[in-house]
Figure 1 (cartoon, rainbow, N blue to C red):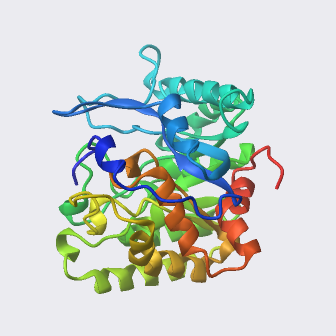
Figure 2: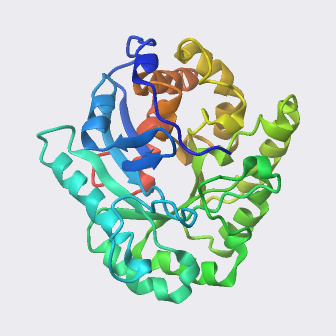
Length: 354
């Protein structure tokens, strides 16, 4: 799959909508900050000012979790976000955690945005290091806002879904070294953000069963697939995905983030059009996936995520949250509040009133 592209601000500006249910409180449990090169297109810069420009567009987003970005890049590509340029390689990602912690401190001042923004961080520590991660986790935890760890493990047997910029090692979730490192998360009550396509669901299921007290959240619903070998076979891909999710839902320690549905692998072709899709169209396209997740896991184990600025290639931030609100419009006010705020705030143990 192709790597990141640069968002087109002029194109995004073509789609403007009134904010739906502006009083509904939201925790965005999955967004990134970075300043990284895009081959042949310059740099994709999305730092605090850029995020605030999206955040403060009308939705009542009062808390957020910043997620690591750029770990496990292929050799020769710029690694991570604000990674340290000296010292042991396994400590390089401390630079990103320190950087994100600083943004959390800026938000907590109340001068720029609601103080709950970046009140949680999902950091990168390479769990394949096994028991050696214990000391590294301590160093990340010292910054105070770290609530989880993510290791990128996306893998699909079809090369059409291989990430062109990531050095993914198949079978990571099953490897002894990874599991030894994974076992170290419990000491700090850290959550684990999982990245797995449908063929990897059995690996994730086995991991969750081996560590039944470890909170795990599946990112991006496990990846919607509707392109490449699944072009014209969406119903078949959907059935595989749904059946795999049904198994995952039997583990009470597995949660799901609903988001990341704009990616090209989904086959919705949301970029190559005269103007961005409306929230009505997005809700219609995504409803079978979102509602399947909610039906299987229930609102108490579901959270909606922006996955910004990745999704900024395809949809404006306020339109994205309008689409999410449309997707939950048929549920009770309490259930809507769970999926848009409470589940995420509790899962990541955010220091905010629930």
